[in-house]
Length: 207
Ligand code: FES
Image (cartoon, rainbow, N blue to C red):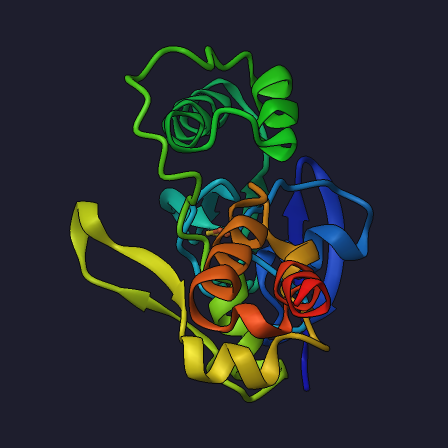
C-alpha cells in the first residue's frame, strides 16, 4: 500500500492509501466529532457531524470525514466557522429528537447550539444506525432493523429474534447516543416476551 501525504489543520501527515480522513486525523490526535461512526463497523456517513473541508487538487468542498478516503496532497480543515456552523445546526436538529442525550448536549456546548431552536419531535432516536449495523455486522443477528422511510423511519427490535438473541447480548446498548435503544428494547421485551423479564418472573412467583 502506498503512502499518502496530506495536510490536516496545517500539519503535515503521512498515512496509508485507503484510510479515511477521520482515521488519518485520529492517527495524529486530531479530534473530529462523530455520531454514526464506530471503528468495528463499516463507514456509514449518515449523521454528517464529522463534516470537514477539503481541497483536493483545487477541488474544494465539504465532505464526511468518516467515509471520504484521503488523497495525495489533500488539504483538510477540520474546524472553521463554516464547519462549526454546520455542526451546530445538525446538533440542534438532533436535539429536537433527543433533547436529553448527554452526547448531544456535550456537542451543543462545544458548538454553541441552541437546544430549543427546533420544535421538539421527541422520537428519541437520531437514526445513526449504530445498533442496527452492530447487530448485523458484528453479532450477525439482525435482531433490530429500520422500519419505514422519511419522517416515519424508526428502529425496532424484531420480537422473535430479540427474545432469543438479545437477553444475553445487549452489545448495542452502549453505542446508542440517545438511550432510546434501551427504552425500545425494554418496551419490546415487556410486550413481546414478558415471561423472561423480572416483572414476568415476579408475577410467576406470586401465583
Ligand atoms: Fe461521519 Fe456520521 S460520523 S457521517
